[in-house]
Length: 91
Image (cartoon, rainbow, N blue to C red; front, side):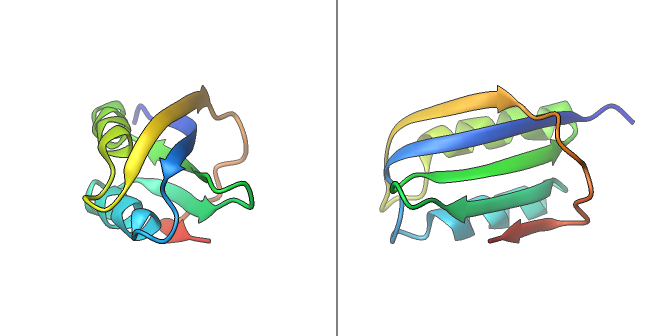
């Protein structure tokens, strides 16, 4: 099975607006594995692993965010870390 692995960092009004739950709910529904978490600098970051079509869809969702958020920018990087994720989690 072909899989894509990304690391992402989302900037803007993304904490305190349900962003992590939005990401986790969508990632789980698409069968992705990984995590999402709030960072001390006000960003939200995470890792997503799964089929390329689902990763592309998640990228679009991250750039839009939930209705109460205001995404300024998203940085995507290739993720080459360990893949020991069973599901998608909120940290």
